[in-house]
Length: 250
Length: 85
Length: 303
Image 1 (cartoon, chains in turn purple, yellow, red):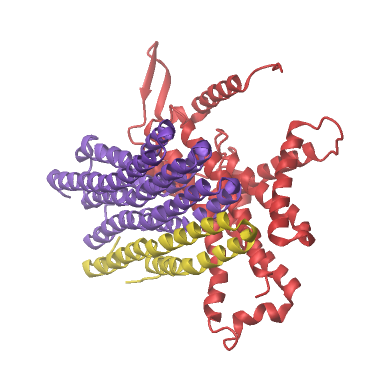
Image 2 (cartoon, rainbow over the protein chains, first blue to last red; image 1 turned 135 degrees about the horizontal axis):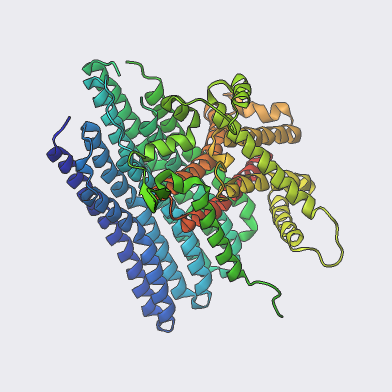
């Protein structure tokens, strides 16, 4: 059994990693949206209101990843987990929870940012189709944030279902189980990077093209749905492997 | 539950390997498939009369890019379930 | 135009209140809070100090494991004889298999209900479900004509059936009745659907192009140097199409369960249910259908 200080170290490290890593991505993604919005306002001063609204909505959804990380950091810091039964499994679970949600929000946030930025550029080009473009942007960002929600699930599971150490457990078993918990955080953290930003790329290109050819909106949206869903499959594989590493290692 | 430390470290390495394999293996396919689909959206917008051809090509291209993700999944499952120490 | 009866907003509010009431009454609450009379006074007590998310997930997703871990006797509807009967058939996974079969029967009944309610040919004033279903059918008919051509319109019923089955499967988990679950969150259902879809793809391709012309690219390394990769790719299609459906629905179910248990099952996460049930469920059903259709259209194309 370990002392509460080591568990606190893991909690502080996890909270720091989650918020810092995701805030980097949030800064980049939301800055891109704002930059594109300003650029579009310069070209179309008449569409000021629509651009402003779209920028705010897009940034709010891109912010979701940062808020998830903040929630997990708050849970790690203030929910009194260091008062429970402590073992090395607790340490690695808490560290893995921070890594999972921190790394896992990078890709989706960048993708949502790209999607929102391209939507702002498209509204600057076609202010009359602002509602269509905004609807498409919201759907694309929701698809992109799905993998972020998977990371949040794994992180909550890691915090709230820390396994106890059975009576006859040897040191080798504890090492193995602790590594499995750490690996489950790593797999969902890295696994959502590619799919999240890939889906964001799809949604961004779709927004751009709806701005250029508004008549083809339905066909473009259909292609976006299929392409985004296919790109998501590796995030799903990561989720499956992560759940296996949490629950199937006995 | 009964495991020497060496066995535990070996199995732990296999599990960590499974995590890293699936995690980093998901990066490339995700980005690549997203790129394919984005370009397909562009192509369909520019020439909607070829929508069928473009969708088919997109699906084939994505299936090929995804094969490395499937390999990662297979290796990860093997490392989780098939490694006996 | 005047509305007769209640407006949509009123209906949504009524349904929301009923949902929350059903969840509270349906046993979610008595897991954590005990409401009753104690020493003559009314008392509400939290009895769930030992209740953990891991146990809840085991109980929800692996009921048989929960049974063996807690050393309880297995019963179905309180009857041991029924449990023993199913245990003889399914062995170690009795409870999960039983609940899956029960849900599949309910799904099939729901689809039959839809089919019987819209089968009539009406020439004036068709009902609203009829209009909706005809819209869905026309939409998929257009997709089939677009990607397979007019001469293969006979595939439309197959495609619409796949969509309806998966959509009803994904929607039925939103009904807040204890024991109701999405059949698609059990890997066997998506895997079976995936194997069926890929089989249909190959049968269609063989009927169109002939046996040898379809199979040659997969086994002849002289004609196609990448034949091994292509053959593996066919297997990976099954894996990807079924794991995508399975993982999305399972992830949604887990997060709804985790958030519900964080608020001690008092509140029902309606927003999460709308996102994961309606949005993700509909999109995944549509994507599965479109992929099944597009794989056929890839396979029958002459290169």
